[in-house]
Image (cartoon, rainbow, N blue to C red; front, top):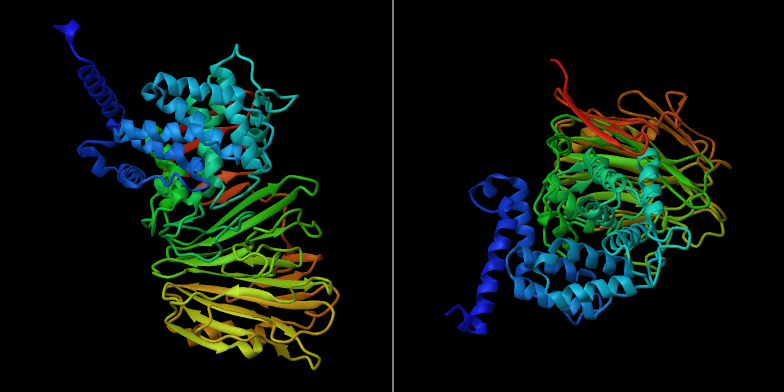
Length: 595
């Protein structure tokens, strides 16, 4: 009887067994406990989006995301559909190779037990015959390609590859070790990017899950957590309150996420995404993996009961080796943040940069306020504004002061900024450079001006209907020199916007005599009596003391201690988690401090 069973029954039996295996694999997110686990609830919501959404196979970028669609389908038991997506992805190689081949190898390792033999053979052929491993143009490209080439070499150690990561580093191992070492000693290159953080987090998840080399695997596991710790003190229920080398879009809502923020939402929680764009696909990998974030990191990302200061240090490689010193003043209702660079150190690349801003919660509309001297004008690039060397800022607590020293040859003789709608009250004194906005959870006071020939402040044009301002209104010939003061006050600090404006007293508290000097200078005494003093390319001082960049931490907040070139220590209540970056074998130590 068994010998006469027909092929259709065999096929049905195989499918039933495969579904049973798949159901066992997804057990951690199924059953009654999943509804009590916030991560499981968020993961289920994410996976449903990519299980029920039809893959748009005619789109040019289809195969950039297709492998992640397939992973969601495999996970939810849609095996035939998942295989069809894999087949299509194998047939259409996306020309931004780093994304494609990283997606291909992660999906191969994670789901090859459900691949057909033909699909296993095709995946192997693609990875062996690829001659693109040395084509990475940016840091995230290079790490994705290095991870892919390294894991493929481990999987097929006796096979000849058509291409190497480089002639000096065929498998990419040295590049992986170099990047990991640089991260933990110098900070991140494409720092705090709401977009590109996804690629770093995902590539190291792949390496941690499937690497065989003992050193690489251990370090990758730690780097993955490092990449979660890095933004944990800057996360505010969906807002990533930090300056960034690569941020876009610049105007967004609290729950309007970029590719990198979907992963943070999955691990940290926060406001449910307004929608799941195709870039949320990068978070599918984390939803189907077995990794769960340590409770201490999650607690740090969610503890916002009291205001605190978060400081961080990051850098950008290249010829200039830019260094960024970052500050975030965080509250339960919003945050104000900024970065300054070393005096006189010219930026090597900044067309997607974001230097300072204010974000707030409880808004149904756009909820970020910022201004910049653009690297690219509005018509040149509608997606990015960027930052230039001609702006320098200094932050102390809830106040930022800045100066702009824009040369005569620069084509953009203006400062551009955004004032989202949704404020409940406003005061318009823009003719002299002042506006005041009340968004409920935050009040914002801005003074942006230059000095006219008679010593008067020249402001900008703005009305309550404007979502954008550009200033100053008129400018002297030649160089443009502008002063900036922006202050945030959060819920409960002032009874009215008028009271807030009177307290700021920009007319008297700002010392502006040197705004149009060779090296523009601004001084402002903040609401706590601190004197902020910034002179372009000369000094940044608070209460007559220069900021000390030598002792600036890699990360510092009430729960995180991490000095430059030191080890990382997390403390929450009496629980401690230490990351020791010494020798070839990095370590994690956890213990409980005595009460």
